[in-house]
Length: 220
Image (cartoon, rainbow, N blue to C red):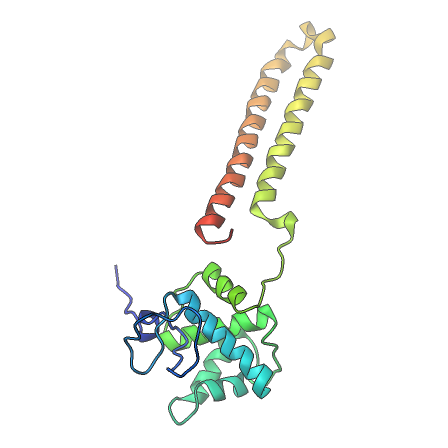
């Protein structure tokens, strides 16, 4: 397996490569081992600092487009700003001069992911980690439609199967007067009942797995 080289930003838990200043960022490591860039306790705090900086660019300096933001983030005296802007624009799908809103989840997250990718030549963080950093910075993701969550889908499957199971029992009761003449149908009703029971168990399993998976990813 090919081992991906860890970038300086990743080693510092500072994927935006924020330079050291007097800013008292949340989650700074007790020992700052890098003389030029901040070191954070975890990447979530480093991503949060990146997010808060982008919000500050908009609120304090009026920077709203990729060209304006990256021009400030990575000035040409130290970086290939043109290539940086082109990369971020391509990855986010936003034109360089379109007006963005750093308080809008969709705009901010797309920009954060693209900056991390450019700074580190990779984007190794999960969606849950980035969302947690955004929340810590004061930007909430849009609420999920409850009808489309995995937990609800599993519950729907289990409920539908349970209803179907009851319907089969009802059919069997209704067929009691004609049982002798419909004996050939009985084995198929038994098979259908076991299939519905299996669907019920699968639905419950989906619900449990979804909750365990969300907990593992930090989505409590």
